[in-house]
Each structure stands twice: as C-alpha cells, then as structure tokens.
Image (cartoon, rainbow, N blue to C red):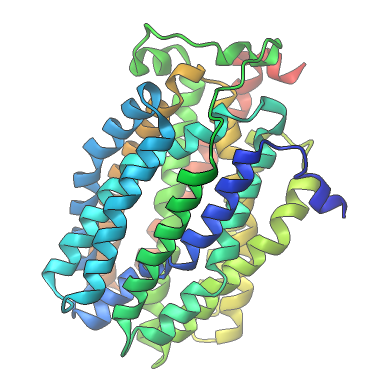
Amino acid sequence: MKLIDQYRGLKQEVYILFFGRIVTSLGGMIWSLLTLILNQKMGMDASSIAILMTVAGIVMLPANLWGGKLADRCNKKKIIVYADLVSIVCYIACGIIPLGKATIGLLLFASLFQTVEGPAYDALVADITPTKDREKAYSLLYLGVNIGMILSPTLGGLLLENYLWVCFIISGVSIGISTFMIWRWVKDITPVVEESEEASYQAAQEKESVFRILKKNPQVFLFVLAASLYFAAYNQHSFLMPLDMAAVHENGAVIFGTVMSLNCIVVVIFTPLITNWFRKMGETKKILTGELLVIAGYGIFLLLLGFVPAYYAAMTVFTWGEIFCTLAQGPYLTRRIPSSHRGRVTSVMWVIDSVLIGVFNIIVGKVYDLQGSTAAWVIVLGAVGLSVLLTLFVIKGDRKAYPKLYE
C-alpha cells in the first residue's frame, strides 16, 4: 500500500492526465513498430529508414519551437485538444487507405501536431504540481504510458503481417478517448504559486528570451546536451534492436514486440519501487545511474545476440536505466528554470534531441549497412559514454549553481 499511497494527494487533473496516458498508449503500437513497418512492409533498408527519420526530425524542428512558444503564451489544454483532433483524423485515414507514401505523409502530419502539443503537456504537469510533488507526478504519468503499452507492442507485432490497418484504427480511437477525457474533466489548470527558497529559481521572467535564460543557466544547457546524447543512443532500442532481431530470427517482429512489452511491464512494476526507494537520491545521480544501466543493458544484448532469453534480461536492465533517467529529467529542468519558460526550454531541448537523433541515425544506419551491426553498436555505446562524462560535469557544478536546492 505504501507504493500506492505515495501517489495520493496530487491534483485531480494529474490523475485525469494519467488515465489519458494509459488510453493513448494502448494505441501506441505504430511508433514502436515503425522501423519494422518501413523495413518489412515497405522494403526500406537501414540507411533509407534513417534518412526518412532525419527528414521527419527536421520537419518537426519548427513545430517544437512553435509548440514551446504556444505553451508559454496560450491555454495549454486547448493546444492539447486541438492538436490531438488532427492526429485522430490522420490515424483513421491511415487505416482506410492502402499502405504507401500517403501513409507516411499522414503519419508525419500527425506527428507534427503531436510535437506541437508536447511542450504544452509537459509544462501543464509542472504548472499544476508543486515542486515537492513533481517527481511523483512525472512518475505517475510515466507509469500510465507504460501500463497502456504493455499489450500494444505485442499486439502490433501480431497484426503487422496481415492486419496493419487495424493498428492505425486502434491508435486513432485511443487518442480520441484520451482527448475526450482531457476536454471533459481537466478543469483547473491554474499554475501553482510557490514562495519557498527552493522555488525561487522558478520565478517568472517574462521579458527574458529563452536563449538568455539558457545563457544565465549554463548547467541547464550542459544537462540538455548530455540528455540529448543519451536520447540519441537510447533511441537505438527501437532502431538497431529490431533490425538485429529481424536479421537473426525469422519471427523477429514478434520477438521484438514481446521484448517491448516486457519493457512496459518492468516500468509498471519498478517505477513505484524506484520512486520510493530512491526518493532521497538527487536528480543528477539518478540520471548517471540510469545511463550506466542503459550501457549495461545494451552490453548484454550485444554479447548474447541470437540467444532469445538474453533479450529479456537485457531489456530489464535497460529499462531500469530508462526509469532512473525519466524520473529525474523532468524535475531537474522544472526546478531550475523560470515557470514562464517551461514550454520554450522543453522545446529547445527537443530540437537539440531531434537534430542529434537524426544525425546519429544516419551515421548508425550507414555504418550498419556498410560495416555491420557490431560497428554500429560501438558508436552507440560511445555516445552513451560521452553522455555519462557530461553528466559527471553536471553533477560537479550543480550544487554550486543551485545551492538552495541542496539546503
């Protein structure tokens, strides 16, 4: 009961967003299987997939910045609802028309609007949650995403061969239900006002530009770089991993789907435990722990490639690392930047993420096609290692830059 009790006392809107995340994630199978859809259903090689993802990332850059600006200046609930309505139409259309270039175009268009709403969603959670409860709120929403994702990757793997259109319909309907819940029951989105010493770093600075804020907070910018490198390497669990499994096993899509489902099961089981057990550990140390566990998970996968049970062990360790990083990254940023810039700083971080992920995927895809899997994974592990090094610098300077957070 203690693990459940730690989530009590949050604002009603946080619980609505939590249930909304569950429903949306039930239909999230498309993105977890995107590499296999492009590879097996549309005949694209690793390099072509990487280039497509990079082009998509470039298209999303203005949407990220626009979404961040909107999140800081407009009604966040309306941004989420309107953007979701466009996504719903696109997914339903993908389920009706034949699979082809038009499908890719609709998916990119849907992703564009989901990108616009992203900063608003993150900023809304921070706005309605006091600092002391913020890690719990992010933990609960992360839990909701993965509760919904437990079955969807496995279901998607089973439907991929003959019933892919059903996946698109399920995704559209799921987003529709989530959007209705947010429109109907999320009412009070008034930002929480705090006057504690710890919260002084979050005081609004309306007249400052986002770049001025980052210049005044070099530790935050260093954190953003470290996090972006981590995300670029982390992203390979849905790019290189399925390619390797499909190359080694005839039923690689189904195996990958079950491995991704395990990822969600581990999140659901261990997120409350890690949130409770490590509640006194600082955000920076949690991030470092997570990065090291991700390296260990990838290492197990590489050393035992071809041995199916090892995939589940690797994913378990990898997911522990994912949990540590996810629990720490949102609270780290929102405790150190002005509340007036939450959306814009988030969007800048996503832009840097997109650029690095795009360039990284192109490099990894080319190396994979020319030199093979092992060479590609060396690059991935090197990127996580560099992220660890930058995180060590963040840890070293954080106490000096933000002393009130350590009192």
